[in-house]
Amino acid sequence: MKIIVIGGTGLIGSQVVHQLQQAGHEAIAASPNTGVNTLTGEGLSEVLQGAQIVVDVSNSPSFADEPVMHFFKTSNENLLPTEKTAGVQHHIALSVVGTQKLQASGYFRAKQVQEDLIRASGVPYTIVHATQFFEFAGGIVQMSLSGNQVVLPDANIQPIASKDVAAFMATTALAAPAGKILEIGGPEKFRMTAWIRQYVQATHKNVEVVADAAALYSGAPLDADTLTPEAAVHLGPTKYADWIAQPENQR
Ligand SMILES: NC(=O)c1ccc[n+]([C@@H]2O[C@H](COP(=O)([O-])OP(=O)(O)OC[C@H]3O[C@@H](n4cnc5c(N)ncnc54)[C@H](OP(=O)(O)O)[C@@H]3O)[C@@H](O)[C@H]2O)c1
Image (cartoon, protein in one colour):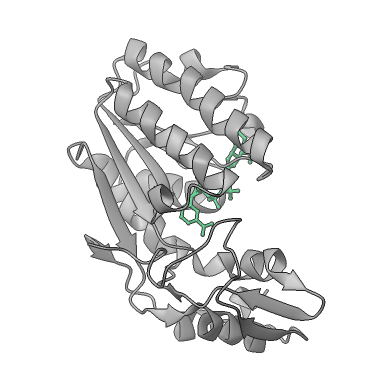
């Protein structure tokens, strides 16, 4: 089966490509680094010729409000009609648990536009909503840093290893299109502060982690369970304590 992985050079994408190739499929990484650009349309119709499945795990190089909206809107306006013309039978895209509740955030408004364009495209689809990746803990620290304090919302989080997300994306890409959102998460729910403290301790960061009920996540207010799945169809098996104990993950 010919499967195009948009963003196939990224954290999730490279693992999806590898898994699909191991399973004997012709999985092709499509991204600016391989000559395919969804923003400009460069290389799109060529790479999609004869493809049955498209996995979209691309991400915007900038998370600022305007560029991120431009990225997800324009990319999908280019990609989805080209897939329709090529006769693609399944478009599977990765988004984030709680996207619909996080609309005060420019990043999540852009992800919502991506999802709406997929639903309206006429291409059979599955949208996967994943929780935050274990690998994203450092990003959360950076975006929540105030002096030497990491100021986090007083909310829950259920992070998942990127390898478990990639495995689910690869399996789901080969299944029939669900035509709806499928939620996935990690095996354990933490207070956000408790999770980030584990990361900070393991990586020896000299910062204090505190909760503030008024703190925002990516510019949006959180309820206790905005970021956790309501009805997960799958929980990744990897536990955070085991994962962060590996030296290669202590970055
Ligand atoms: N971080 C989290 O915790 C989290 C949680 C749930 C869902 N997600 C979603 O997961 C997805 C993938 O995230 P990731 O961390 O794996 O991303 P990533 O490692 O930052 O990779 C981004 C990929 O997008 C590609 N890309 C950038 N501009 C492009 C363009 N114009 N045309 C085509 N491809 C382009 C990049 O290609 P080059 O290498 O060529 O630049 C790269 O392959 C995102 O959509 C995100 O919303 C993330």
